[in-house]
Image (cartoon, rainbow, N blue to C red; front, side, top):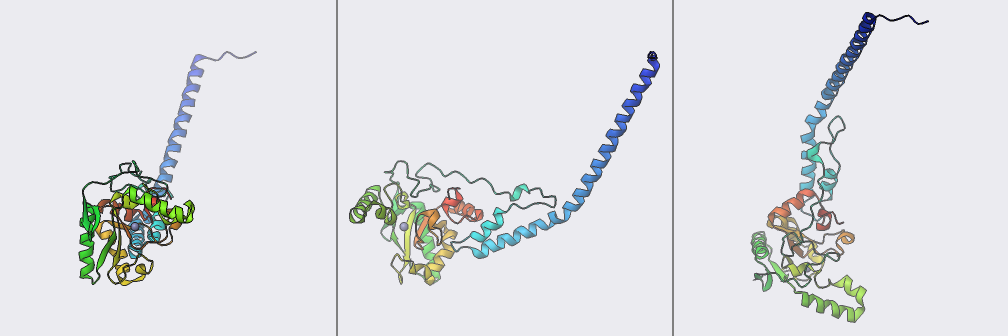
Length: 282
Ligand SMILES: [Zn+2]
């Protein structure tokens, strides 16, 4: 037969239970604090070393620039830096690629075999000429500055082809297609709405001593100088060597695309080798 339990005994048992729970909580809190302190002590040394590591990565990217590579910098940035605790440092995390603007007049518009101008018959406004080639006035002014800097370095850079209309591109593509078929025509020329030249922001440039639009220009001193300095004036070499799979075009050391100073800076910082890669479309 069970003993009746006195109310006093029940009360003191409950109090004892609460005391045990309280002690457990305090002990757990103390051990958690100790672990946290240990971790932060360990993490502080590598964290302090972090700026140095990223400086080295940046220096490598600069050294690789402005060759059409930029790959070294990209690799360094693509690996997220971590603090000593293995937690990624937010500032070093690769940001999501920006979306390409839809406005055909935007300096950042993406035009390639997969991305057409909208509308496909878009015509830029306010074209001005450089060496007889029409260009958007921002691009023309930047090209003149690039040419002036080139002249100081001993190179005469000449605009060979600027704005080309949708109608021209359509005729050119149709002529190639009639000669050698659609597939061959697609390899040789862009369809209407798919050529950067239709934006008025692209220009083919070679030198007075190597006027032809051939890869040989890229190997000349003038071609190398232009590749090295184009981005100082807001241009990028749109079809770099070794990026054919991404851009859809063979290496064209003569084809400059004006992005403007801000976007060119962001592009260079991103470490992307092509505009497609910059927009996450590679
Ligand atoms: Zn071109």
